[in-house]
Length: 46
Image (cartoon, rainbow, N blue to C red; front, top):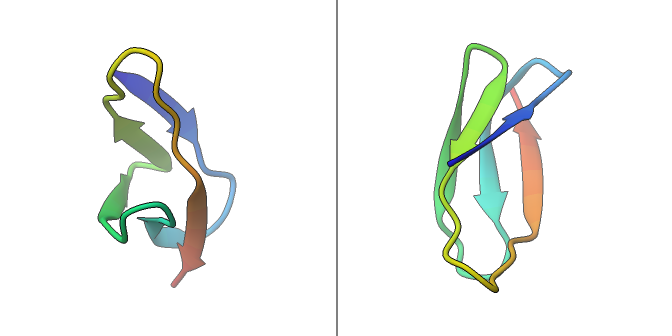
């Protein structure tokens, strides 16, 4: 699992590769990535 700090007033992030939505909780994005993979995220402000 990866925890990425989000220094904005944001509620969610969108995975631009597959369209899934990842919630921002307590100022962090928590996600799990399989080996040899990546993700492109767009932070959605409140």
